[in-house]
Each structure stands twice: as structure tokens, then as C-alpha cells.
Image 1 (cartoon, rainbow, N blue to C red):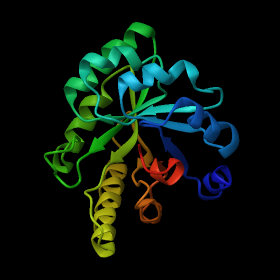
Image 2: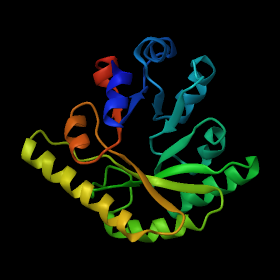
Image 3: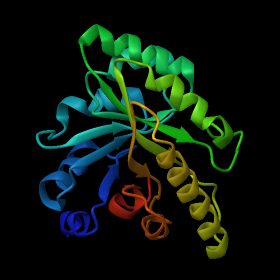
Image 4: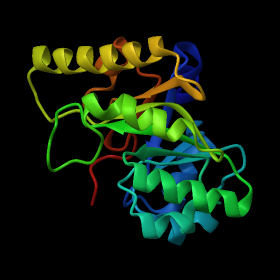
Length: 213
């Protein structure tokens, strides 16, 4: 059913695997049609990587990525969705050059300007995109957002309207070596609103696996 939803809506459904044992993730792959895994923590990815049924699957890193951990994952992930600084881009470039890989990335945007969350502020986004666009071993494929927590439906719609506007505005600028193929936004509590506002990667943890233990 998940695979049919994904195909019908041209939306990639990501299984967010934080704290979920590898055997349960494999059930989602083998029986649920999941083809995209989202990893938040480097050590957890390393611990579970060899146990995953990875054939035909993509793995995206979606958590805050420390520069000293980049070298451990560049050969294991298909995309890094959480690039938010020139410093991190520099390290990804260096480590990918070592293994001859061009890493697809999404730039993470802190739409709510929350100090507790990572991500570049919207007014700094274009500058960062231009910087990354000059890297030979990084390819920008879109943007990633983690919206502020809120329960009010009107407020949620307003936030996702802002996200959609940022995405459309950047797409219209046609920056060299930057593609706006993916808008990664929306989680278990707001993915339907996200899809209505153009998201084509949605990151589902609780909706697929239940509450975290």
C-alpha cells in the first residue's frame, strides 16, 4: 500500500529508522514496499548498516551531521539532506573526493528561525547554495525543512506556504549546478499538508513504526 501511494503521488516515502531495530526496518522493506530509509545518527547507522536488506533501497542521512563524522558515512548513504553550512560542505567535498563520489545533498533550511534547530536561515540560503554549487563532488538536489512544532491547522498551513514559497523562489533563480528536484518536508503529524504544498519526500517514523520506545 505504501508503494502504491508513493507511485500514485510521485512522492518518496521515507522510513525514519531512529531507534527502530534492523529486523523491523527490514520487514518494512520486504513486506511494506519501503525503498527509502532516513538515518538521524551516525553511530546508529553504522551499527545497523550491515543488517539492513539494502538491495534496491536508498539511505539518506537526515540528522545534524558533525564534520568529524562525515568520513564514516559518505560511502554508505545515497544523499545527505542536512547540509547547513559552508564548513560542512567543505568536509563533504573533501571526503567524497577521496572516494571518487559525487554526493547528492539537500540544503536544510531553518524556516522557523529556531535556535534549537539546525539549518540555514532563509535569508542566507541563496549565498550557501552559490557556495556549494562550486563544489565538484557535491550536487544540490533540493531543500529540506523541519517546521516548528504547532497544532493549529491554520498555523501549519501558513508555515508550509512559507516553505513552498522559499522552494519556488529558489527554483526560479536557476543557480548553476543546483537542481530543485526535491522538497523534503513533512513528518508523521503533518505529511498530508506538506504534500499539498509541494513536498515530494516525506519522512515518516511514528506513522510507520508507532511511538518510539
